[in-house]
Image (tube, rainbow, N blue to C red; front, side, top):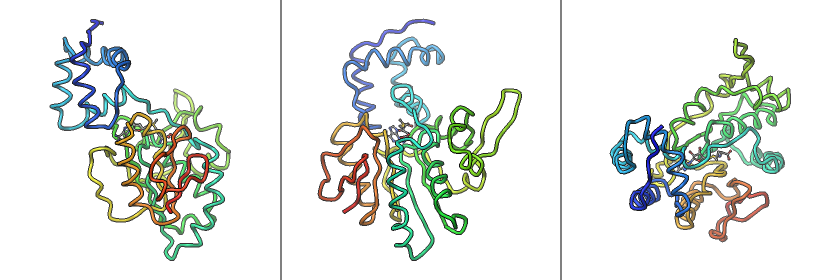
Amino acid sequence: MFEIELKPEEFSLFRKYIYETVGISLSDQKSTLIKGRLNKRLNQLGMKSFRNYYDFLVQDTSGEELSFFVSAISTNVTSFFRESAQWTWLESYLPSLIASKREKKIRIWSAGCSSGEEPYTILMFLQHHLSDFDSWDIKILATDISHKVLSHAIKGHYEAKNVEPLPKEIVHRAFDKIRSENGISYQIAPHLREKVLFRKYNLVTDPFFFKNRFDMIFCRNVMIYFDDVTRHDLIGRFTTLLPKGAPLFLGSSESLTTHRETLKLLGSSIYQRV
Ligand SMILES: C[S@@+](CC[C@H](N)C(=O)[O-])C[C@H]1O[C@@H](n2cnc3c(N)ncnc32)[C@H](O)[C@@H]1O
């Protein structure tokens, strides 16, 4: 592979563009990361400089290259039932949510859903805790900026090592077991898959088009790369989509220093709309 240098002025171009389009603020130290992670991509594309790649990135109106770039510089790490304390809290919250419903309808947004483990966990959780799950109209909106993770999520096909540690009853009800020459893997069952609407959506630049509010919003481990201004703005928009009492889930390492008048911390990075 041909080693391509990333000049400081090229890094500045990427930094400005990524901040404006994705909200990710890259520190000077990230120059080495970009060079390291994108050298292979430049070689694949037959490009000789990062300036060429920059032009290609900004001219790609499909957003495909941007989603590739974001995946290269950030993390898509996720897992089923991540942040266990939040699921325990949700167990105690669910009865009051159910009791407050006039219509048997639940709407939830998984913002920054990566490869789908988070929205599917929400459904597994609801299926496990609602005895009349099938009679509810449940829809999960699951969005991410990355095309690559979304296509994985849409397939809903997962390796045995990520599924088999889950309680057997949940695995049995939520997945179809697949046996092939490569061994065993698991496919999300169609009755759960059809309750998720996957969409490519950039939380920073795409318009907030939502007509209805959500019973809860998950935006966990997404804003870690955003600066304060971007985070503040996004949280403000989330609050407009949450009715009084509804929870907003963030990642366990994330906390809010703003919006104290509209969002109350309940613990475990769970905030409740006041
Ligand atoms: C670490 S994963 C978190 C997945 C899941 N929420 C969880 O906590 O397990 C972060 C995801 O946020 C997505 N992301 C980053 N910036 C984004 C943006 N501006 N708009 C939408 N999604 C974004 C990434 O593509 C990635 O899939």
